Amino acid sequence: MFFLTSYLALAIAHYLLLFCNGQTTHTVTVGQLGSFYDPPQLLTGVNDTVTFIFAGDNHTVTQSSFDNPCSPLAGGFDSGIVINSNSNSSNAPSPMWTIRITNSSEPIYFHCETGDHCKDGMVGVINPPNNQAFMQFQSSAMIATPSVRICGSK
Ligand SMILES: *[C@@H]1O[C@H](CO)[C@@H](O)[C@H](O)[C@H]1NC(C)=O
Ligand SMILES: *[C@@H]1O[C@H](CO)[C@@H](O)[C@H](O)[C@H]1NC(C)=O
Ligand SMILES: *[C@@H]1O[C@H](CO)[C@@H](O)[C@H](O)[C@H]1NC(C)=O
Ligand SMILES: *[C@@H]1O[C@H](CO)[C@@H](O)[C@H](O)[C@H]1NC(C)=O
Image 1 (cartoon, rainbow, N blue to C red):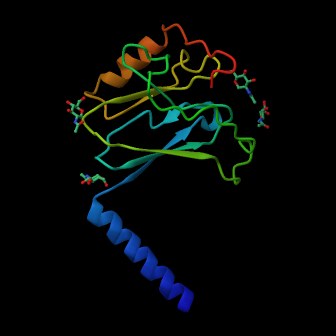
Image 2 (image 1 turned 45 degrees about the vertical axis):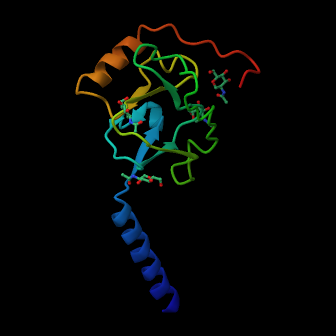
């Protein structure tokens, strides 16, 4: 009973904290059953977090730009290759990786760097400037020359 009460208190405190700060936690599933980023585009507020759940094996979340969809952005974020050796087991936990959004007016474009994933269309955007941005970004990714991963550079 004590446990339940204190857990409830904690949960309520946590909820109030979230409520007061107006922050939301968004999740994006990565590579589940051969899919790409789900959802591939989302809108956030300032200080919201986006957690990528690596359901599939061997993917990255690597920041790029609208003009160069399949090339890492200089100074941008990169999850690095995430291996999920449990990807075939539906009840095993998946690795997660989280970013915090500091400016919700600035679109954040990202792609998967492994294999041909980017040019197959594995891209996403946070806070797209308009409804067409994701489709345009994905189309140009599918004709982009993928970046070269130089051995030992990361
Ligand atoms: C976001 O977080 C920063 C640092 O904690 C804070 O200064 C700022 O007021 C927050 N902005 C919003 C809109 O919550
Ligand atoms: C998951 O299963 C697929 C298809 O059976 C197989 O190709 C892949 O190597 C497996 N992945 C892991 C991490 O065991
Ligand atoms: C947020 O991003 C927009 C668009 O890039 C930019 O105009 C604005 O100055 C940025 N705001 C801050 C506080 O950095
Ligand atoms: C992950 O993908 C890279 C290609 O980008 C490949 O060289 C590597 O063997 C893959 N690793 C696994 C564990 O599938």
